[in-house]
Length: 224
Image 1 (cartoon, helix red, strand yellow):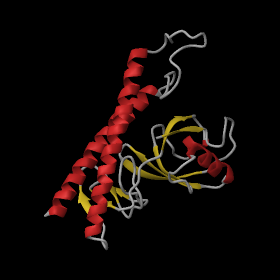
Image 2 (cartoon, one colour):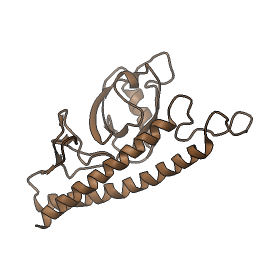
Image 3 (cartoon, rainbow, N blue to C red):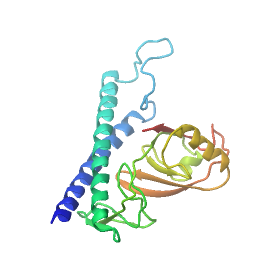
């Protein structure tokens, strides 16, 4: 009975987290649209005057709301992970299959999860159930800028993707340096990448390489 209640609570938390992620994605999309200031860009021009091409009060409000949503997301994710640990300690030999309403996603045979899910998926993603793994994790970086026709864009990364795994990098300290080192040391070689996108874990393969723009990927990661 306790396990059943905990499963139900965990599913409710996941639905709340998915709703928060949808709000975050919408804000990020608006802030990072062409000509927009992005998540942290300047709101003043080169002469120090407020930019006239953007609505500064709205931008500040959306940035503040995004920060609040991230805090809520972190709290919910921590609670989900706690519940999963309890559920797996009760049934150490089996994974927990939690049903979801039609239209949501299934994550099977996962190893870690996203800002969006607690399990890292295999390549198969369905829409009716979710297997939860105790090794769930929290995204450590957000793709907040990406250039058209860049290696990152061509290989499937999208604006707003939240990174769970980038090659051998799965969180920890000194992330910017480690991400750059991972890309440089694997130039011309595919790197397995796991992100969450609109509440769904996605497996990608990204190959750092030279192109007509800057860097080997053509995108920018913002640490979470």
